[in-house]
Image 1 (cartoon, rainbow, N blue to C red):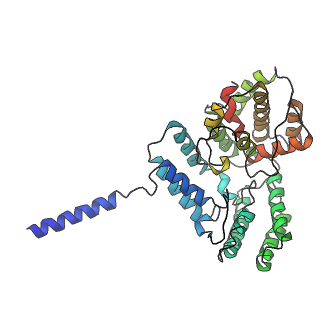
Image 2 (cartoon, rainbow, N blue to C red):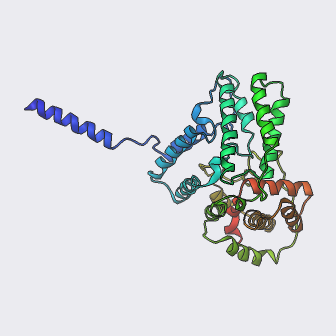
Length: 347
């Protein structure tokens, strides 16, 4: 009898363990650490020889997407504060949209980041695998009318040409890089540089506006609200220092002196941009800059402004050079909606 009772108890414990598996990530901080490791090729915090690029770190591969989804699902089961919940919901919603069809986010030189892990004998093979996957995914995406815009295409081509010119890239790997460069040389980008040029792009953009602003307004409603403020603006001088690349967005760097609030999104450099922007003490000059950026953001991603149109608009609002306007417009194209993090200071 006691033997049967003992076996029965063991069976119950086994079934209970099977029915309630522990979460692989138990806190917001654990999940953030896991996301940083997963995104090693996107936000490189310093590669060292001997580090390995694993299969699930090949950006937007099936293994990567599965691992990222697992982390997001763990986060959804945690007790989080309101800002953290908003971040998680935003990232989960983004899984539905076309981002995964563009394996190489154009704001980041992923190839250079991966090659920096030169201590790993597996890295060249993984780079080759990832380049082939990126080309195959771009081919597949075109069948659904999902195409890179010309800004993204130009940036990717520049990264490839830089690698081809480097003396530190193995000849065998360089031949694969050349092949992908040749592929992009004949690639036809989409006409619109904004998200509206993509299938479901308008909905994707709306989700970004909702998250960064903390409000739910359509782009047209935002236009009305912004115009009320813009029409009384005086043109101000743009005197922010611009970086040489788009690896970190202009807004991330704009907030670099503010108190850090941890985030989950690699595109925000793991910072909670809306929370940090809301806590910032803004001058009238700062507000004018952000209004001009918001206006251009909606112009590009909703009204399908061309790059020249957006540049002209910024120069009309801000005293800045064409080169500075070019950089800001590219940044708005690559990081849609981020400027709306500052909306609480303005509306």
